[in-house]
Image 1: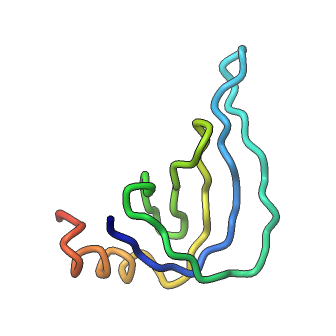
Image 2: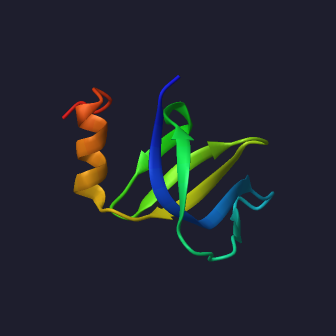
Length: 84
């Protein structure tokens, strides 16, 4: 298993869709940034300031992260985990 560390804070949980097809989300407490070690296989995507993580019970969490997109891509590239 491979892991990456990042300073993150939770933003939203995506629970799926309701019967009307509307996306069901819940805001997470906007806490301070904390250091977290993340299993690479859980990462669904990374944007300029968010990481989307696959979670139990068919949910997805959206976390803000520090350090910048280019730095995150560089770390993944150095580990051989990013194909340009």
